[in-house]
Length: 462
Ligand SMILES: [Zn+2]
Image (cartoon, rainbow, N blue to C red; front, side, top):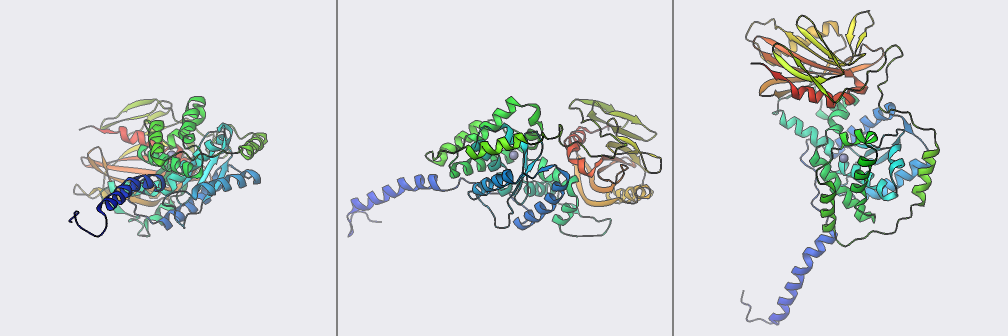
């Protein structure tokens, strides 16, 4: 382009371009959302909403909910006001907010906009901005679709070998199969495994929402810091569900600096204070949340110890909670918490909690494949467990060894309860080495982190 000639005065054009360049990034910084996009996902937002609806129906039955009308109304109004600013919000999302009657300081989100805030959060929050921070963070998990994103990552990591219910021959879409897992696997895989990067993203969305809604965007990260220091015991589950990203406060500060000039408005905390007092005046919540429900004859086991003991087998070693015991049989080992072995309906001893390891010799000679051998093993297990159902089967990698991961549903030896089992099979010479993780369906999620640690610790001797 020839800048020297033309009908417009060149100086003016330059000035206009110069000003436009200056204004553009500023305008974008002030009004544009930071780059907040969900990761890849095999599910649709509609499936997120469907999954969330199914899980929430179960959660609502299993968790003690507080139905104080004023508090629920307040929470839902506050929640809806906040999510109106959420990036990538989808019309399918339900946005339902509930209060769990628990003193633990925790909150969680199910896919599709079902958010649960514990009573303990109201108790610990010093102002509405801090409560809003918790809701905004949970909303971040919803709109960034972390539950189904992580489920998608798991499917992808397993090498694409996804055989859904091959043994029963029932095929459905992955979402409905996962939904069948109910609380057992559902909350485990869709909730508990929020990674640190998911947490960082939920923080970013949370700070963005707070900023747009006129709250101090620092309130969220500050609240997480305060509660970790002030109430270490009451926040264990929160930081297990939401692993603390490194440099959380600094990262959030940095992001806030990019959002634009402060827009914090004066917040009237009167309504918040009123609700906080109402909740504080209600009957105190039960002491411990998440105590497994069992019938009167069987006491729930104490929580697994954080400290691990080592089990040395002939062909494998692994670590397990040091308040569990190991019981060696002829070609099997049971590791279980106190009370984990119960008497079944026919007077037999059965394992309701823990892990068992056994060796299985396939009947098909030496040329067997692991998938067929696993199927044979399942058929033999079904003889003593007629209600055993395969929910999902995938290939996995157990420290360099090809393995098959099978999720099962079964009747628990605890009367009237279902159980979730995770079977991992791997070939050892001419036999199948089978690890089974066992817990009643409603409590599987509490054991999932322990089971994960145990699985990670397995070492197969050469
Ligand atoms: Zn989180």
